[in-house]
Length: 109
Image (cartoon, rainbow, N blue to C red; front, side, top):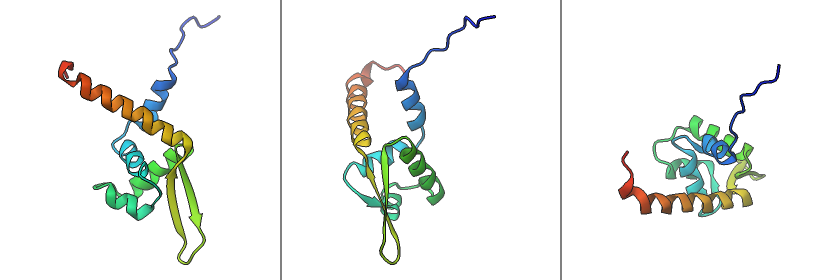
């Protein structure tokens, strides 16, 4: 028997699910200014634990928004930066930000 129930699929909804937590957008915003090391991101992202930052960076790397580069110096350094896809994401976030500012007065929530 064929299942007639079709699930709606919206790629934007998938993106929102991946980014819908307290920290991802803040991390992306911080990386939009350039390469940062883990502790620099942690310092700029006030209130995030090292464990949560590590998890968020892993997710952002897995979706292709963040690049993780190991620099072979002693001690080993790791730099994080936005990929091209991450830079495109910043543009999309700015559009949503501007839309929210423009329409906030009409929102009833």
